[in-house]
Image 1 (cartoon, rainbow, N blue to C red):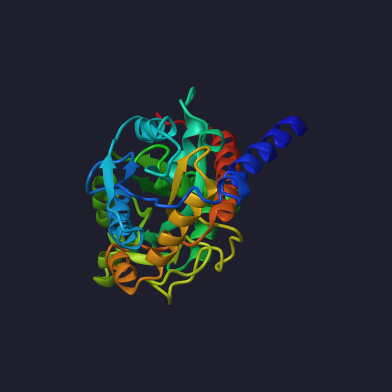
Image 2: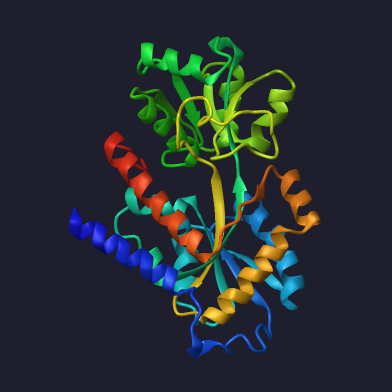
Length: 328
């Protein structure tokens, strides 16, 4: 265990170090960028990752003085896109939009063809998507403590829906049960639309889902929102408490995205990209576009990104092993 911890700390240090200043390449960003930058994502057009990437890319291009072009390379749990970027020239012209799946996949799949800490240099965190814990009114609970009490008294008899095994909606429910020392029964679907249909119908009464997906039904009274799942309250629903506020400290299952570059990308280039992303996040028009999509800026520099990724990997690895979660 001590050896594993030493290796994890060493890899994290290397990941952070790749985005730290150095005199040797202080002038590397001179003239950068002088051609379009590609932002490669591992999901298809129309996905949350795609939407977030395009919102950020359009504005980042204005600050960089060159277009930032989003390229969709879906498949293999984002590995196709990730490997393409990991093997690209470390010059700042090929980037990868990383996310939760990259923190989870190493614990669910064998032989992942890249190592996040070895093959990438962090730029910055970009976007967060708050999940909402919702229930069908037929369940008869109106807040998180009541749901906790019900699950504890009826282990395995309360069902929750997800968009598939190993997805954040699945892991959110497993983490909820793990945190309270009990278990809900998972009902996986092939996508969030099918899951939401059954939650609305009441056959599966609980779901952890993106705010934009469920808030319209909450406003119509078809679903009851119990809490948001981020570390702090969402700007989208500021009056809704977090699960952490309602008695489950450190509970945080928001979806997030962040930009990384190939390892050994010059620090000066990383800083220029990070500055463009920060200015993008501060833009009122970008904030408005993100809000319309149920998203919000998720700030964090290279070091914060590295620490966040390490924390996420450790947390989900522990949960997946303890709950016997598989991708099948």
